[in-house]
Image (cartoon, rainbow, N blue to C red; front, side, top):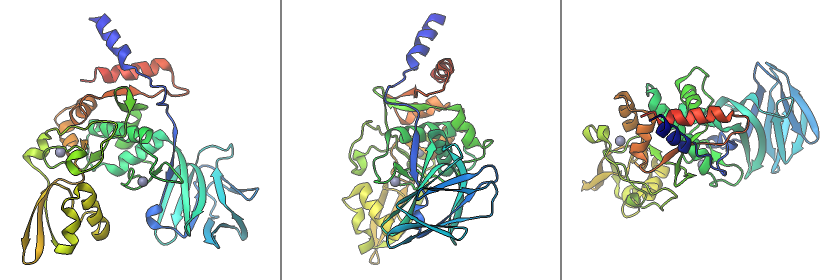
Length: 369
Ligand SMILES: [Zn+2]
Ligand SMILES: [Zn+2]
């Protein structure tokens, strides 16, 4: 028995050569289309701004704010009365590495981040891009994408999904790898180290979902309506992983139901265009105008009445179903096996990580059932 366990555990430690732990470049605050941006140091450490051949220091807890804006298509930095113009401006710690800082869009939002910062100008907007450790990005995404009160095993499943997406997704933006919206993965500030999202991230550190030995970018949605869909079901192109339509017990027994009324013109893109038609309507009327692509429709008094179930495209992991499975005692492994049949969990090769620790982590997940 022991021998068999050892062999299986050894097989579980598939370290894919192309799947290395990495940093990710995330374009942030794009939702606000900022024409101005503020940068402040955190209380803990200095931020060094590298601009036009100069290095400027924002001391720890300093009240000095660096202002960025665009003038004649050039990026302009305004700091303590000094004005510098550059195509790109960088901010790092004293040793050139990741640093904590606050970015703000005046009158709209201030968020804390950790990483190295590049500020560019593009089409009249200030574009902040943060290169952050993948685990910081995963924790930030789990925090932003999960409903309050979600049990740890479901958060761990979300962390593996988020990490896999950061490893295998990307390529949808010109200046960075991922945006911070649901277009890629929703992401705000990194959560506190003691938060459930941070714990779920640490407990799955470096673990991704693979199909035929390769990581893929898994899809997820808030609630599936009773059965998950495949990309083909909703008129989307296929992907590296062939999704399966699986029964989602919790949503099947008590689906999230919704109804909407739209004008004939508003509803027109919904018919014959599947998920992309729904997104067209959501983009023009608001993100929740048509919550899912699982609905019936009828015409009533010159309007289109939609009655549907679920939220989102319904492909891959169903967050509502995963939460219910975790509440009933399912493990991370069981949740992911259910929504992503025929996949495996793989430990990313990580520089600086003890191979024995990776081995033990993989072993733990192999036998988590
Ligand atoms: Zn995006
Ligand atoms: Zn579901």
